[in-house]
Length: 85
Image (cartoon, rainbow, N blue to C red; front, side, top):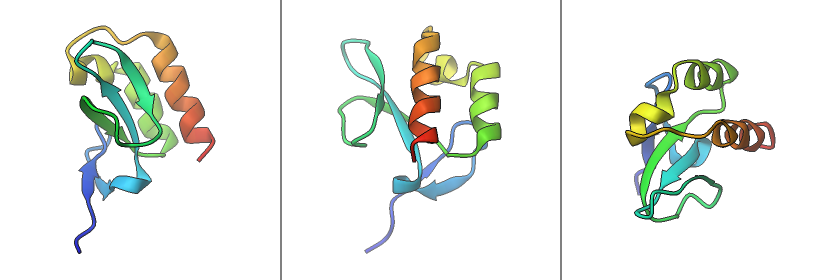
């Protein structure tokens, strides 16, 4: 069976899905860090590289991916999630 690969939205590199952190926007418009990797909704993946996280925050890449304003707390949650991996 093939490994599922996804692209980091910051560095545009391909990684195994399990090596990335997923952020989801569900149909109610809620945005959250999906630790299970299985929540319904539009997903955006970020690798664990610190420079990607900085680029993500600086350029507000999640705002572009979800076509809406993403609160600062989501970026902080993402930072914590990646630090705990």
